[in-house]
Amino acid sequence: MKKIGITGGIGSGKSVVSQILRINGIPVYDSDSRAKALQVENKEVVASVKALLGEESYLTDGSLNKPYIAQKIFGDKALLAAMNAIVHPAVRHDFNAWVETQKNNGIETIGMESALLYQAGLEKTVDEVWVIESPLEMRIGRAIKRDKANREQIEARIRNQRTEWPESAKIIYNDERESLIKQVLGLLNHPLKGGLE
Image (cartoon, rainbow, N blue to C red; front, side, top):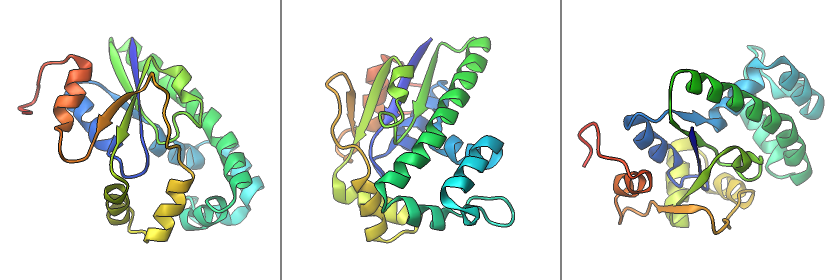
């Protein structure tokens, strides 16, 4: 089985690349959404988050208090590292279980989308890494629109994200000049499907 890691900064277009893969029959594990789900579903993770950040980390319905958590961790590198040390191992375990399910279904290629692929050590679980790159102002604009956040909040998140990549990573440019679909399918050496042009 071939495993492709998909990463890049906030607003770079990771989810668009993942969707192109899905349309072409390649399942993609979304580690960021799974990380959020595990912080609600996994009892050990929940207990650890509460111990680190307090009971206020969760709302009365059991969902994550996202504004509270973001305010606590994005300005404090030590707290962010401690939070990642809780969540990243849970995501790795969850991903490995998902991969086994895909193997059992006869899937030959899978993707894993993660903003924190390298920070979480998840690059060791994939065969190759695709990095989505996009101009900074474009990324900020997309993230503000998508997350309904202000510029300061987005810039704080960007400061916590990786900006340099290993030479082994394959770069996809999402700058609205080159076709994303052609770049993705070129890396896959994959014929067009689903009427994509």
